[in-house]
Length: 361
Image 1 (cartoon, rainbow, N blue to C red):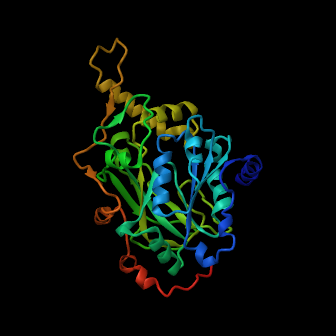
Image 2: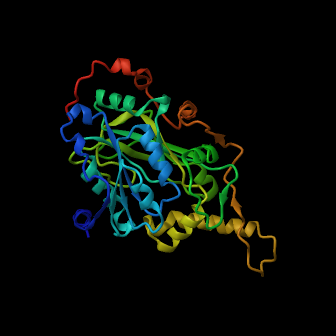
């Protein structure tokens, strides 16, 4: 079945569970008003451990509404989402492996047209460089007629390591930031930001790969996403990371990526068992192989006896760095060339943005 056929099938089968399906109070808003507001689009399944801090983070950041497409949660994810008035939930049971990008493009077409939106997974928490607010960033993007922002994923982890048990800790936003406050850039690979049929991007922007997941799991994961963008009628993702076409801004933002938390082991086991992720969960099979090797290395008993699983998987390195206040400390990520900001973006301020004219799109 083609992607277009899958999208048509999804439109016919998706169920509405909670919240408004349109932002009625914005029906008569001007183009200028819409261009200075933003919504969040998220595909989720069994995300109860992170969904509350996810919602609170994006609402505190200034996003107007969060639209979820739930892929068949069996935990309390839906109940937690329903407790917030600025959320909407749609439901689909289509297989994630076949519909991952389709789900996201469906959300873009249904809720993202004519406004700024960020497509974020439940473990991705957005921050802007130089302590810029969402409103400042949108003013800058509109003023310079940009369509999208490059977002780099920064894997966060605890110094104590990852629990290798069936943990399902439910986090608060503050506990998450205080506990999983370390990152490591020692095994990072940078490549030119070149795309076929894409407008030229600022040479300071790079595609990033690797990081702590390469160090610990030998997984050279792609860390760059074009996940914040203005929704045009033809806007769609070509993959989970990259847009079809857009004019990329001259700075990058960061997703603090909380994959490596206490439910990592159980999520890995589930992904390997279901083979419901990219290339039949190839990435998660790599994670599990590393955990099995750790089990062998830490085994105190003879190999003829069953091996006990170690209680923790260490992630912390001598090169690891603490990020105690993401709102205040993104300068270090710029200095380390993980994030990039142009001189034009660095000099921009609310004052320099006015008087502001409406942008023709």
